[in-house]
Image (cartoon, rainbow, N blue to C red; front, side, top):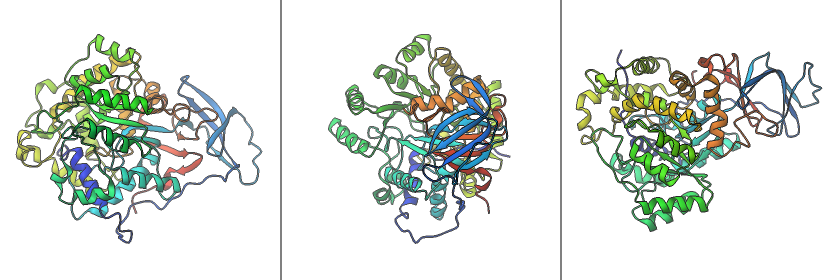
Length: 521
């Protein structure tokens, strides 16, 4: 069987979503839907939910408290205590016997794109499928234990519509922290004009909102930042690299120092964090210089020096490495034979894992037609050649960037860990071949890189909670915090291969029986 790849940039992917959403203003449109008709259970206000006989995984202290009873009331954890008897439940209360299964905090995907469908290219006849997938994105996250996501660049109007549906209980989904649009200079990453991909894009974006600011001068930047942050954004998403991620395209415009000073001053004055897309040492150096809130992705074109990492640690800058997206976009399909510099035990193993995943059943993660189309589009690498793709209007990832990340990223990440830098966990899901609900794949990959199960679990819970500014509410299991948790059959500190299979997920005290959430008829 062939391996797989990625045929469209984030911009094209964004446009695929945008075009599909052109129809969302037409509520009478119907079609085949794989959305499960399922609603969670829970208690009424002031009634209690008791989880008994649970083994609580304390990710902060790194220990397991056996045979615990968790009392949940009004969406928050009220008490956690050792209690061997059935609690005296009153009328309207609920009791769930966990039967010695393991309770972890609800997982957090700290880097994803909720309004992107994972498609490589929009099928004009598959608009309803795309619309269906955008709703599925949220459900897939919940099904795999993710109770909070940080959206790293969206079609803002569409995102807010989905959030409202989640809040009303009309759509199953996690909590959403967001930045709204990318704060990028005109032509900067993601560096394809949606209108160049689809003539209906400007019309579609009247419904969906623009996915980027694409400012042209400081006045334009300041005005657009004010508009963008006025709709509840808690951080600003920057794109720091001067090198395009696209095959056949070289350097792209970057912020001036004046732009960056304005952005960071604005963020400080408005209590906003910052997060930067960074694949290169150039972007890393500027981000550290200006005190970025978090480094997103991994550096591929350099091995970081001790001085680099110390500067990052001194400024307490965390990293969300998204190593799994590098695995997906390091496309061997682009080569007759993989260059020798990319042949080592780690990369060879990751390529096998990637191939096996792409050719497995992915019904839990994507509409079948979307994945099949993605696999088909991978053939364009060999058909046109990487250097010619951009000229041909084929917006595909440059695999060398991502192979370089697989080559140097693990070493850089372990150096950061040794320096005490907080490491988060995210997927970049929504871009082609990276599907929502796959945080477990990043967690397993971090284990393969060298982090322990406990360290990885911390990355996906308490570390992520710190990075997104919610450590007082989520990320650990403590009294007074939101009742966000997942129940695992096996001990996650002993085996990392079960991160994808929660038995029960609870968000805000609402109980989701995972066995009842199915995308197949």
